[in-house]
Amino acid sequence: GQNIDQPTEMTATEGAIVQINCTYQTSGFNGLFWYQQHAGEAPTFLSYNVLDGLEEKGRFSSFLSRSKGYSYLLLKELQMKDSASYLCAALNSNYQLIWGAGTKLIIKP
Amino acid sequence: ETGVTQTPRHLVMGMTNKKSLKCEQHLGHNAMYWYKQSAKKPLELMFVYNFKEQTENNSVPSRFSPECPNSSHLFLHLHTLQPEDSALYLCASSQEDGRGGDEQYFGPGTRLTVT
Image (cartoon, rainbow over all chains, first blue to last red; front, side, top):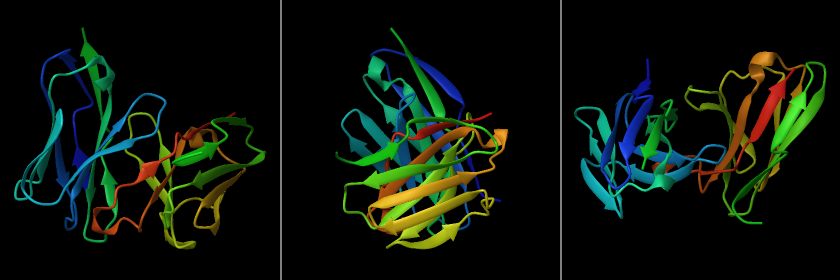
């Protein structure tokens, strides 16, 4: 079957760094997305990786290892507004998005 | 209005009611999607429309009936729903139907409660 695994919840401190991991098993692979969803709001696009390696976008970076079926989202200099759920989704060979259940990130002062 | 809008934002309906959810995108996109989001579960893709044509129906019960009159508007008609259908219903759009890594733009969702 096709599956995305990511931790249910993580807690981190304001100003710190946090890494949210995601492992995927899909029938074929055409890239991996990360979305951010604040409580009661729409998910918003953060990143898309299709090649191995790290892509940096400001305080957020996303990493992909296709051979390991693994990705992570790295958030630096955490701010209170980063408290949200982070959704990992993999695009399979049929260009269907397989979604994870999301990681709820709690930022403490 | 910009982006993707959804109405109503909240809806409470009985199991015998008929109601409709509306989605409108102002981004000039060609693909639109309906998702169901339940607590602590992955997003469930329900329907995909590309250039007004339905390209995907993920075994959704017939009590959910989509309608896409044009590339900017998407409806989800609801009738004789069950309490387990209570969830957040999200609409999204993208330039194409998800190929090539097109990001999806989501609306704020309709929180549906079936009593």
